[in-house]
Structures are given as structure tokens and as C-alpha cells.
Image (cartoon, rainbow, N blue to C red; front, side, top):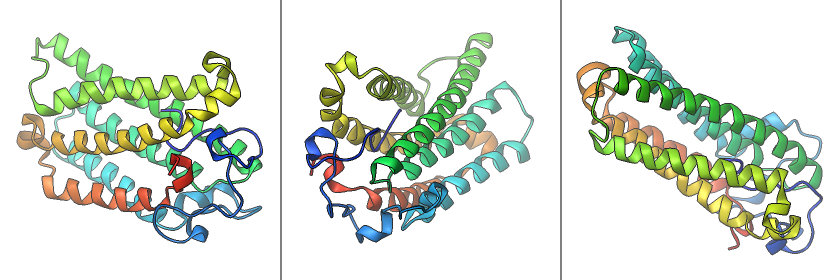
Length: 249
């Protein structure tokens, strides 16, 4: 997923449909503009905790901590163990990529944010790929059944959705000519952003469904209610920082 919030490279223009921002139109979906707008000359790393971002940051770290603790404390470590380790880490990186770019609003900020966002998404893609390959190899090596649970079905859908999101995002950023030029590519950014946020919700449901798999119920024992709480906090942290005009609202 190259961008859940867009990847503009040039200074904003007064046409939101073309990817620009109207001056003063920085109101997030919930909360005040100052809560989620990067200040001039502020280090971009602060974007990770601006406004409700700190809640999302805490939730994503808590997810990784709970999954990794469950894997290492409830051994033995097997090839299958790589899957929850990698997928939780990949989701953590994905959240960082969203949080870092959401508060950007000037041309210079967006350019820096886009590069960091893209880099994080490359890293996230590689981590997710490791997790997917590990479980597929494990199933093939042990003649395991595919689509054995709701989590399996959701995981396949999420994997293809992620791949499409990454491919579209990166091509819009690197080769806008594929969409008829930069102006044409900018016009579909709002749909790409909306898809990214919807995908985050779908990934949340996919992880929650993992608590009902045999592996978790018999080995890891990560609690359903605890996982739901973590993702509720993640939503509370990410979604109030959405700028409405970036979704065409």
C-alpha cells in the first residue's frame, strides 16, 4: 500500500480534486486542525504522535508486544511461528507509514513524507511477504489444508488487497504516465486513500479472526477481547486524524 493518505510531490494548489489543499481547509475528520497538522520546521518524526496518533502508536506497539510475547513464551518455536511474528511487525510498520504522512500539508512536508511513507511501505511489504511465504511453505511441507478457517479466507483477501494497494500507490507515485499523467493520477488519490483506510479496517478484522484459529486457541492463547480492544484503540488513534478534503468530502 503506497499511500493510505496520498503521495503528492509538489506544492499544493487550490483544487482539492487535483490533489491540492485549500488554504485553511485542514480540518481532520474529528478534532481541531492543529491536532494533526505538521508545524513548519517541526521534525517529521513528531507526526507519529500528533493528536490522537499517540493512541494508534501505543495500540500498534501493544499488538506486537502481545503477539511476540505469546509466541516466545508459548513455544516451541516452529516455522509457523514466523507468520504471527512477521504479520504483527508488518502491521506496525504499516501504521507508521500512515501516521507519518497524515499531518503533512505543505509541498515540502508532503515530499519528505511521501518518501518516508514509500520506504516504510517497501519494508512493510517485505515483512508481510515473509509471513505469507512462511505459512504457505509450512502448509505445503506438512500437507496442511488451505482455507481451514475464516482467518484463512480473510488472509487471502487481505493479501491480494495489499498487493493491489501497493502496486497502484507506487505506480501513481513513480510512473503517473500509466494513468494519463500526473494530473490524472492526482484525481484518483482520494480513492486510493479511502481504500487504504478500508484496508486497515479489514486487516484489523483479519488479525482479530486469528484469535479463533486452532493455533491460537491451543498454543498462543491470545485473548479475543484483548485483541479487539487493541484495534479499537488503533481506530481511535488513526481515523480522527483523517483530513476530510483528502477523501473528497
